[in-house]
Length: 205
Image (cartoon, one colour):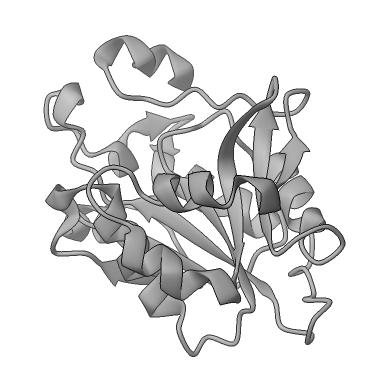
């Protein structure tokens, strides 16, 4: 297991932020965090990817079925953040997660989505390694297209919080700062497909 990645700008760790609040509307109301993956809730696998990739502390944003996630998922050492406005979209969860990291001592955060089981610890570690050595803004890329995970230095957090609305998350902010982003090719170690519809459940096999 990789140790938490040191911050070259001050010795603080790179935090992990897992967005796991969605209600799975297009999955018939099945919260994505609780989808079964290799015998355990999907949220456990995503949190483990962040931890094994070198992130810590870990904050997990919950929304739909938050009580059930707490009861069923093993998330030791994670800070569980409730987002009562989860139905507004990913933007509200990103805001809640970044706000919860205020005062944590982290100088950067890697953001991962719960519904991308093909993204594991290797991709997280590769994005973390870009921090400081290349940029305070980095993202995995797949065949030249930006994807997740995404790393934000703490200097970006206030503006990301201000711009994160609806289902766009940080999309608008990243588009405005495209030239600053260090793209980290992860095509050889991860797959960015997400689970949105029942047909996508094959990704859990």
